[in-house]
Length: 285
Image (cartoon, rainbow, N blue to C red; front, side, top):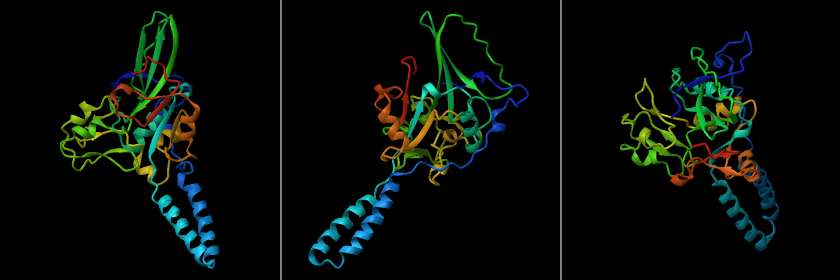
């Protein structure tokens, strides 16, 4: 559970040390959904139907087939997923800052919907894991180890599991899965029992200090329903974070899964996460 760590490095002299003051969202739209090709195909089918209406019996039979295919396509719903290219993450934590601003996450450094862990692998086989903080008052920890083998950064967030333990343990049904694959919390019915927080194997939930209800990443559900990218994806300067519809061949997430060797966190738990990692080191848990 990363809830403390070191301050992000690399701030230019004279600039604000609080990256949240530099984050602004541009409302970047989602990639072309599966419907993009379908819409064109529907238009084609509509024109085709117009042509065959006057074609007698054969035309009528073809019309029924076309109409049925169109109806099936119209009922296709997205299934949202998330990709992380570990080798592209530079640990700037702009994603963390944007998430806090967008979702009114408390400013205290131990409340996060998403965070970035820095892994330092030493020559002697030891591993140092730290969460990279973003607040100005945090003191940076100087790494003095001289036998560092390699280091890398790993963004983490709710894994939006297909079989979420948090949903199973909620006594009032306040945590639930949507048809498009996102696990949400109804803060009007949540009683703040913390069962879901304890059940999450990824440490992705916390109890909001003001509402006293469970809170976590929602893929910025309010944004994706408007056709916009999640805030963390939009502000990532290296495109280490990807988002899209797993059912769409045009989605960058589908291409990402096809072109890389994909891993998920804690696969042995059979929760079937929908957050996929490439270039993931075996030390990451």
